[in-house]
Length: 262
Image 1 (cartoon, rainbow, N blue to C red):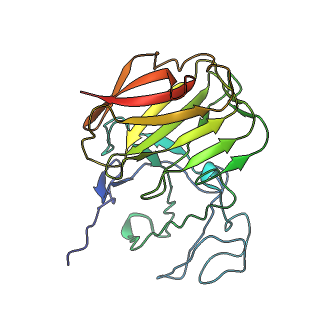
Image 2: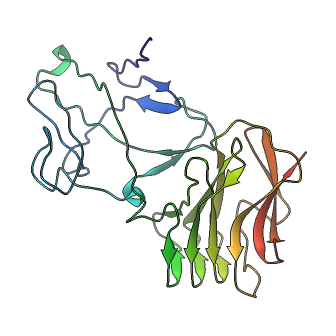
């Protein structure tokens, strides 16, 4: 079996392995720019993982450089078709700071990277929130709401009060056309103040026209107030092999649904 490799020894180069995009970006990355969540160095061949517990292998002991993280702490990047990305696909961004002693005369090899996700402590999976949720401030740097379908089952974020999406907010909805599932948010009242909506498909299948997915389930008696600034009521969005038409009066009359159209 041949192992796929990507040569990143030259700045600006990149490649993909199994849908993951690897790039070499010049610039500083270490402490002072952002704090690492797992740090290995100095001893040649090393292994380790981030944890709030005592180091298990070769990790540094400082909590600043070795600690657990929430999925919400990992930056989101929506592919634009450049640099090996697929337009509309949502990526999680991890940075590897290769600050090796010896400069150009030394090479590093990242031989194995595993990402493990535990549902507790984050809003993925069946996250439940008892109070009102506001995404974004209206004029801030941006905030994201990203319920994600887990493998072959649908998941939802359940908000027992109102959901408010401000102008600097982004709701990223993920469809898996292979398993015919999609992520969604359930809230008791929804207000959209010009937020953005992005749709991605982690599958490659063609879905039968007329199939309906619910992106927002509004459990209140009132209609959804407002629309996403980039997705007017009745408009369509094409992702992969499928085109979806949005309806802010779908479901039982006040849900946001996505219907596959020819």
